[in-house]
Picture (cartoon, rainbow over the protein chains, first blue to last red):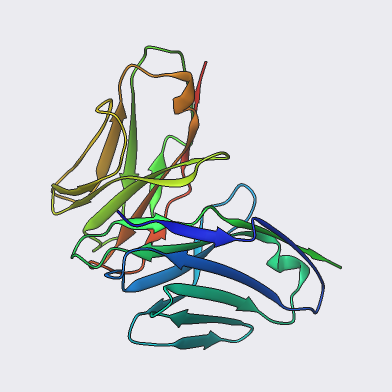
Length: 113
Length: 112
């Protein structure tokens, strides 16, 4: 089955700096890679996603890059703000027609004002 | 549109009991997935239902089961509860397969 590794597990950055979270996956058939943000006590919320036919996607301060050959994808947050503090999960979706998502173990991001 | 809802939000049970959790997906969404979230194991996939059929199942014992009704609402059941079953149980719905999943607020289950 799919295996998703996520690094780092914790990340502290100064407000205004950039943050990068990296994930690798094992199943070359995976073709959909969402990123979720989970604030303390709240549900995971989709912040950005990318499909395997695209190498990069950007949405304001958030961008995701995908390297299919190396089987890794990354989340980039620029100009970080205190409200970006949360746990971020990457995920890879099995493309076999079923909705089976494998999540990374999460990165706790702390933005220091 | 109303989001994904889950009931109850909190539940306390004792070992050996069973529990049923409910999930109502976003209107029009036919796929419902269930996840277990614990501090140590992160988000782990339990199972996924589409049009009342279980299409995928994670690596959980047979004590964990679920079903989906014709209106896409889903329930999951855990029998013979163990202390290790204490977790946040999240359901997520999506319009198509594969597609963006929208999570509910979760049910916090505590097993004493």
